[in-house]
Image (tube, rainbow, N blue to C red):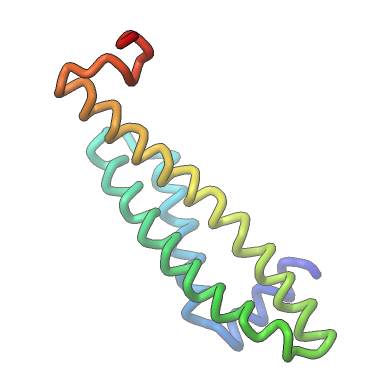
Length: 119
């Protein structure tokens, strides 16, 4: 199923999920162009929140898969594929957030094990 059909179905049936996906894409675009680490940290937190929101809404969509007909199942699979691309990028950014926080904490505490120098 192509992205256009998934997009139209989201627009008609799940406008909240579609708006969250658009919001997430705007966050990712802004992260690509951000200049400061403070801004990047805020955007990563926003990305984590968007990821969690999309995940909950997508679970609601996929819960209807067993009772859907053939067209409904194809639509759900298409929507899941469309959303998974955005979610994968959001998840990558959230992982960078956690790693950066851990490295800052280790540097602040004088813990060198994060860099492999503690052994």
